[in-house]
Length: 318
Ligand SMILES: NC(=O)c1ccc[n+]([C@@H]2O[C@H](COP(=O)([O-])OP(=O)(O)OC[C@H]3O[C@@H](n4cnc5c(N)ncnc54)[C@H](OP(=O)(O)O)[C@@H]3O)[C@@H](O)[C@H]2O)c1
Image (cartoon, rainbow, N blue to C red):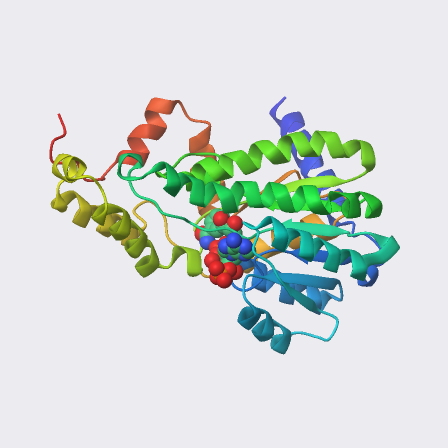
């Protein structure tokens, strides 16, 4: 009995491995548009796909970042400046893409741009803090997708949305996890709708990686700014000691570590764009696979206990 079971599991993995190895043809003719290519995952993916021969259309938030990327890549890679929080910028970038891809359409759209946004305890934040993050991570992603979808449909291509493990488990206060839960929900409905047109939608869920976004000093600065303008009553309830311990918790990334090998993430993105049978979801990093994702299936009381373990207690806690 056990032998049959092991053989069945082995067979399943063998078939899956074989299916996932098949690569789409004519990669050199395919256009891929990546948002947030100025740094981090987006930047590495742009260079990686350029090396592989795809036609990369890299969107950077600033011209300086675009210039730096062009200097490191082939002449085939082209750049455009794009702020995904601004409709007029998205409209201009869409026209720019249209002119390049012509009748071939856009094979790949990678919604990668994002911010950590103002964060801290929910109670320390204002509505505007949530709006700032949601505007980029969620509404920006949605608007870029809606704008470029006709071109993706034409190519029967792929949409790759960068979510986070924070889109499966709300690990901190503020708009970040909310925005990523939104990206997951958007991707789910989009996947079902676009299947009719031969378009595939994949979601990337990285764990913790070392990029500009997770730079500890930046994170400290965000929390400090939010704390500085918090109401006096809030400061009294939590206390300065709480803030100091909170900083320590962030800098240590209490539960896991920030990994340096960004290709663990970009390899998933590349697979989603180039494999004949891409996955629906990709967990990138051991912490995502072995820690956060399993925890998202645990009973809530258990997940809550793990996530709050070792965290400081507010001064006026019961
Ligand atoms: N690092 C992690 O541990 C981690 C984990 C899970 C998910 N993610 C997700 O991975 C994606 C990439 O992040 P990263 O870690 O590679 O961080 P990153 O290096 O900061 O990259 C984010 C990129 O998005 C750009 N961007 C920010 N706001 C934008 C806007 N309004 N319009 C257009 N571009 C904008 C940034 O440009 P500027 O630098 O010019 O602002 C930057 O190039 C994000 O969606 C993030 O949520 C990251």
